[in-house]
Length: 372
Image (cartoon, rainbow, N blue to C red; front, side, top):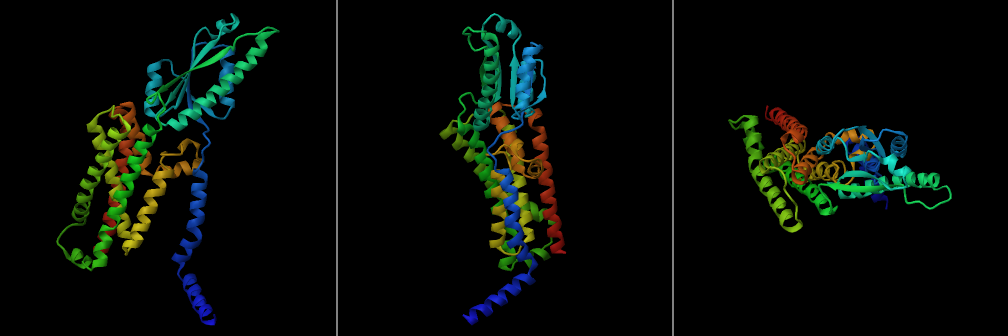
């Protein structure tokens, strides 16, 4: 036992001297608990709501105040046509639209049921179901108050009812929401992990010195390292898309050319991330661990794949801007489910392009420093 304690004291002393190991052991678990503890939130709040009020009177304002006071919805736009609502949904500016028809007050006074229309973006089936439940509960609450006010001792029909419309996924099939996310998830993990091992493999096999002395520029070396994995990852991505179409009925309503360019940019961003990891470590085991860590958890939790980004605290939402899958999933669902064009997904494509340039540039700088 005394010998074991001596070994333990020696190991403890080494850990204390090794600040990097101590930081990993103490800080990283607490950091991930804080980060994902706040991000893992099934509650949906502050849903972006567009309101097209064609009545503009006290009754419509009472209904709107019930939506805003619920904390579930934030009115962010007041469109004047259905085309404007469609454009806002395609751009991701709103998730729900409330249409209050002209003549609602007249129907209420005449004892008729007034129907208000709730249009919901159905690309996320789980969120759409929850949001519709919120909207229906709010309208029922307002309707119950009006019913008491209008009854005056007699039975009346429910004054206000909801007429729902689900766009892009009318049947709210969960597979149409999950499959695009799985495509991004699988491609990111496979691409990051495969390239994160590429340069480290040279170091472990003892061929890195030959690479350093080879008459080739750093950029050419990075491009050469990326090309094989790029084609393999692209083939893998489109095999997944083809399987999703055949097995789960995934539609591709947009342009295949745009889809190809989008996937290519996303694959490039993933490969760049893996190459950057490969330049930072000296062992394949550590490269695999870090590559898996920075690709799996952020893509699954911080990209909007499962948990809505709008429901996360603002500091966590800021972190999600550094997750390439956030832009890929938004653009992929737009192209595949909504059939949008380049003008709608241009911001996501620009973000993926910028991310790819940054990670590939950092990887090249790191390699140039090591080769120098």
